[in-house]
Length: 392
Picture 1 (cartoon, rainbow, N blue to C red):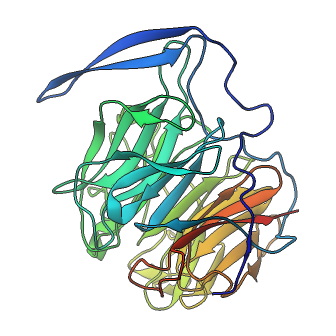
Picture 2 (picture 1 turned 45 degrees about the vertical axis):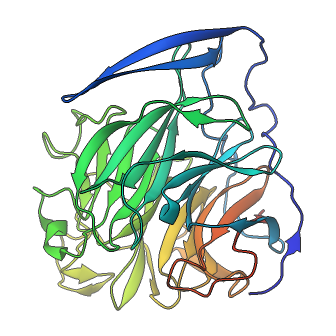
């Protein structure tokens, strides 16, 4: 792996996006009832505060690209960092898949464990995607996690407690269960769309026929309310399914124009970047990229790469560019989606090894996290790295 410059920078809150200043606190008690149990948790919040939310995305237009080298922000990460969730308070939450842990990168640059989620880890299982729902006055913010339970993959949420540098989680509440667990092909990326709904990428779990089966939630992008209910305006009545015919989506994101994008692992031929639209069929397992059964009902990808170039994971949409973290490709991919056909470029090839996730950083930067010790790469001295690159 090429050497990158060590400089712990950019971990503080974005200007103008911190919490309101106040010294008054209140304590509230929340009782949660499920079909099997009732639990009570007490959360201390700051009066007038709504809790942390996702960091403000850059107000960027046009196509952007990296304009400088990689900078190392943090080393020594372990447990297969999987998702980066930057908060508007200056902290960043990081899922550590193989430890089953959610960690916090504090505004001061320290790493600490926030919580260990119950369930199993290993073989692609553990804590994967993260999302945050910012609270309203008098209610806490909630952290959502895609994670592996004892017998399934599931979505759970918990109220965020504490403050930057000492965040914790309240009672964990499963809101969606029953996704098949397996060795890889689980999908796992989640995110709140501009419509306030939670989107969930589920893999086919090595049962490819599930992807075309509208009665299965596998091999799909699912859309649900923040409490795990089916929205009334989903494309298939009474179903969580938003789009189908997917193999293994590892990245989802939205542009400022509201369009949704997803990166998807192919099998042997090509990997994909797809523009996701409600009710569309993306072809798997009958079609991989533009290869296979020709059917006007299938939606083809916007761009493809060979599997050696990509094995795409997390994505970040900045302006008209979709940035894609590439695992096997050991690079950052960029796609200018403002043109037809879209223009794709590659950056930092072999500079950091396998890249698992990418997200907008403070100012005009991108943050990335490596994944060299995930069983498919070469572990590096110093563990996994959090990296930054300027864009413009």
